[in-house]
Image (tube, rainbow, N blue to C red; front, side, top):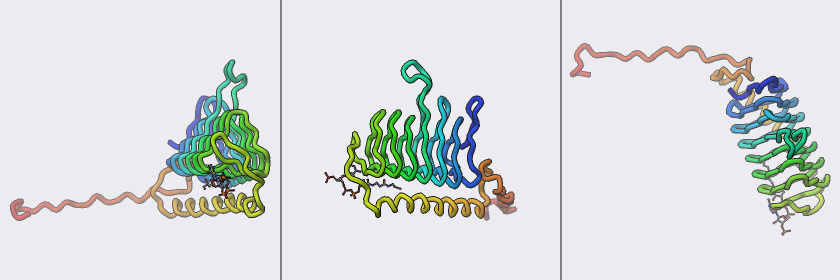
Length: 211
Ligand SMILES: CC(C)(COP(=O)(O)OP(=O)(O)OC[C@H]1O[C@@H](n2cnc3c(N)ncnc32)[C@H](O)[C@@H]1OP(=O)(O)O)[C@@H](O)C(=O)NCCC(=O)NCCS
């Protein structure tokens, strides 16, 4: 089951959001309007909360988790992801904040209490250490990340484009699922089960030797 409660919390998914049937969303998680969660993602809000805004894409294989309340982290630490964010394939976002209109490159890792401010691009494979605050409007790359340069107008425009592009793509996937009629996924209640397929009849010859 891709979307499941944990203790008193059940994920709240906006009806226009797309959650791939191979993704797993657990517990205190909210996913906003027109956002998308792609195959094999794990969004586990069991020991703190996770909020994903509107028009944000969480791409294939990404893992989002949180930190629990303990003497090492009083109150625990949630994960917050804003609107119009592109989270590339196989990213790890752990107990951190990503503000609006950011692009998190493929395979990047953002660690506890890090803040990725609005309109930041993080290069593929980069690591944002715990507690680091990235300045709005800049490109960051590397492990640990370093500030490279301000994003140019084309790159800033791309942040908008990327979010819009993934909104369009998730609509195409929703449409395919609607027309496929091969799922009983509870998050797609409009989908019908396929009609029962008649079992193939096995003709048995009266004379087995003749086949
Ligand atoms: C970060 C990125 C945007 C930089 O693009 P760019 O225009 O080539 O950047 P620049 O040419 O200004 O490079 C700046 C420096 O960062 C380095 N660099 C670029 N990408 C890097 C990366 N992912 N990790 C480490 N260093 C990187 C360049 O080699 C260059 O180093 P130098 O100054 O020592 O020569 C691009 O490389 C990238 O990683 N994009 C992410 C794409 C992605 O994952 N999209 C999501 C998929 S949906």
